[in-house]
Length: 170
Image 1 (tube, one colour):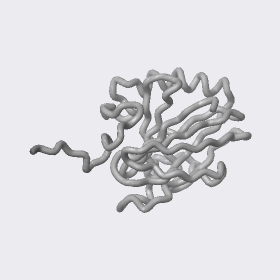
Image 2 (cartoon, one colour):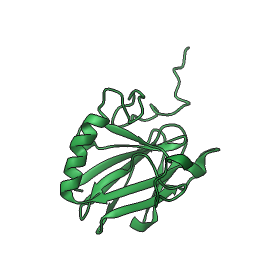
Image 3 (spheres, one colour):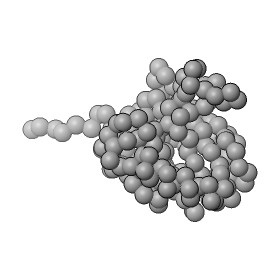
Image 4 (cartoon, helix red, strand yellow):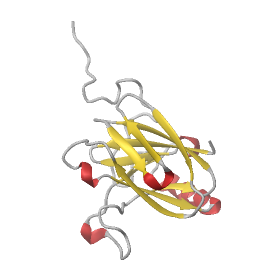
């Protein structure tokens, strides 16, 4: 693959990291009614899209931080579960620039219907510029695009991200 993106399902949003491109991670939340710009689709537009270059093979690795989610983007023919403590992977190559939408397709709780996926496919030059900006905007110092700390490692350890992972005392 030309690029790897890690998509982590969380109740009830996605976060994206780019292990090949630096230590940054962005959260991607659905825009509320008053936040959408004209032309942005209701229930699908997000604040931070997954950004990928056109005509490049993108490897998407998925995991979940809490419950099982499923990363699905029909235009690319991909649907892959995001399971806590486990890594799954799929690939796609987008041949046209644009924004492609998907949704979590695993019933994951009360706000499951509000977990859209937006993949912004851009030129190679635009992607390189975006990466440089994202390294600052979503730096591993804890930004995520909304002021939260990044505590999780880039790749989960088995059971480490499970809400049921506990230390047993004997």
